[in-house]
Image (tube, rainbow over all chains, first blue to last red; front, top):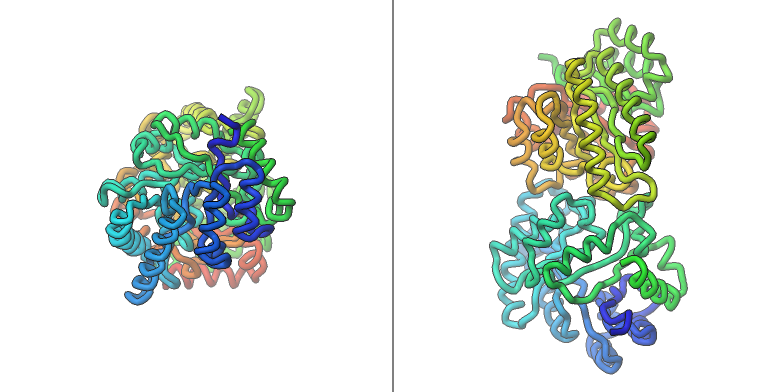
Length: 274
Length: 274
């Protein structure tokens, strides 16, 4: 098995340097077999041309980013979010994605009703799940780091995501991103609770000890404090054999570098420190 | 009961504007009955003069900030941390503090061994607790937001802190700071689990939706997304009747304002939105 066989690149990692088409070609050129595209990148390229190039290059899709963002302060807002999620579902199917990743959304503007937002999230996932099951597209709740609870995702732990999975049933699992969950004292137990069937995606990057920005200062694997091999061993103990998807938002560092060099570094670090 | 009767000011809130003595005088002048001093402020003033002025002003101490920072990469480093904690304990006694607040420390530099750091924390608390019991000074573990797990505190949830309390026994409780725990789906249950005897401190401020800095961008109560009255109702349901300690690190806003105005705003917001 080539050393890149389990590697996937979330295209956010090179989004400032490359268009979707350029990024897919760069990933293929690097010998990396899979990507996770973002919907704004797909929209810019056009879904048809994007999928054709994706197929021509022989790539796989470890997940489509992203559905979610369910809470809104009006019924019309929630309806619009659901309509958008249905389009996301279609795009995930078009890319034959391993899953549609859900970043579930935070508090509606002006709201302090965290419990209410969480109910809206669960209602939204339940509705989307009906459609996703018919499309045979797994939905992956991505618990986001608690520092995003207000503005991006009010599902913030594996346990909380799995409680939702338990209640809503088949077709729903989670994306385990080490950046979001590495701190969780309950992580090993919750990965075991998830089990193979609900571990739909595994995302890697690193937490920099001196993080300078809440959103755009993720580290390359090996440059931070996360024991990635340990967490990998926990997901693999459940039988997870999917892609290791590198997802790095890095305004001040990796987004400023030559993207071919970024991919080469991903390959090197994946081999040496993951 | 005057409207400020339950209010305390953590002196970090005005640390850029005032020395310890100035801050205590400002707090007393505002009719606020209590403070939480920081040890660097005490060191700058001198413990003796600080305590004398504190007593002359008739203030109370809702907690001394801070002990902790237990993990180190050498035995000598851990010993030095313990020695420093014993001095913190003496200062807490001198101020007749409601508790000595523990910010337990994160990963030693260069380490990725989170479980090991957590063991060091528990060992350190256990050792300090022997001394604290003899001094009749309660120790309050402050679970810090998960975004501080690497560099400040690897105890990151109420549940994790209470697990330690369960194992180590009497004389140990926690400081519940809404900034650190507001996102926790398990918060209400863990506050109930803590119960009156282990809820040693209640800290308030707010989480700004657009937080610009991981450490120094806390909001004034009412300016962010935390439902403070709800969390207050949960601690009061356990019988908590201690101080509401305002602790705001705010390099870009509140630290740049007239400190008397800051205190007036604390009083106003405590009355109107907490």
